[in-house]
Image (cartoon, rainbow, N blue to C red; front, side, top):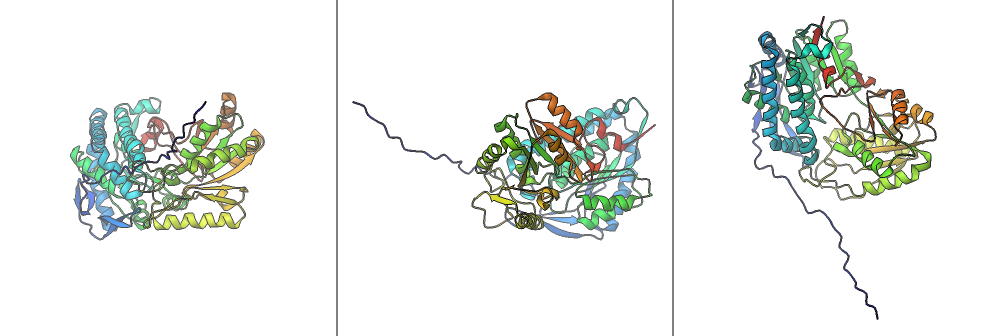
Length: 486
């Protein structure tokens, strides 16, 4: 006689795990950071920065006008010679203090980054903030070794750098630009993005706490008009910009004939190439990380997925199943995988391009999930039957949308990957090392990852080709844009 035991089926789900913002010390209103202190704007205005997950205001922030920009540049111009006169060892000590203070305030910075930008706090906590500190640590070490980074040649700082950073990685991009500029003996005036200025202003508080000499860094929030005015100021010696290709072209035109060095890190439409000999489950995890990390708000997002025809159905099926397990919702919930879209304008841009994909005949699959009633949200979306000429295969969506195309041969994969005006990054998935190196050498991309995606390190150079810009940030290559080399 046999007996059967019937078990009750348990459906596991995550309980809410919200990160509390109660300990965050935000001011009701922030001025401009000029000359080592927060000041009221001379001719600017004040706006409220908005939480994209709730549409509620977070804090009031001053936007810089023309007179404010001139004041910031004048303060930097006065401070820069004294900063450059310090030994590299002493400048490195300041950067080291900044890095340690970022670590000490890591939890607060992660929460504010997620509140202001909409990204999951798990990403802010585990990626943005640690990497920002790591970049200051890295360039603190380079400050007294600058000539070694350029082949032993004599070096000197450029002077005052105007720097503009985007809204997708506000604190991290500020660290990418400020750390090498300061290590090389330059002063800097930084303009954070209009929708995400708060962590840059908290970084200003950190500069005060680290006793960075007044004027060495100015932080002047503002919109596109502020950025356009900053790069057109007469008394700057260097411009560094991360953002859209359209704005990058405008900056390049504005600087033409002025002899001002320029670095641009612009848009991308990066190819993630999966060969039939890849570890497919591993590849699917890399695909998810490549496109849904930070809601797809990543310049090097793997938004063009190229799969070898023989495994296309298998990979697409595994990917769709994995997408169904992504959790969309409150950015401050530590279980959230996909947070809020950064702004209403960006959400409308994503919706417009997705509609164009459907109208042009691509097959859309969007994850069915309950989205919050308020805020800006877009569920992870997969397009199949995509033609290379479709807008979703050509234009940067900057959202959680991946377009799938297939290839038969290695040569076809390379041709399709390179069939883009952009050239920022790419991914290759194969278990054959020789194939990976051969394909990587043929791809027109500044960064190529093998069997991984979106891996960043302060010691590694990052930058693009074609309409993805020029110049490199990170490692010794990141020193060159801020030095006169003789």
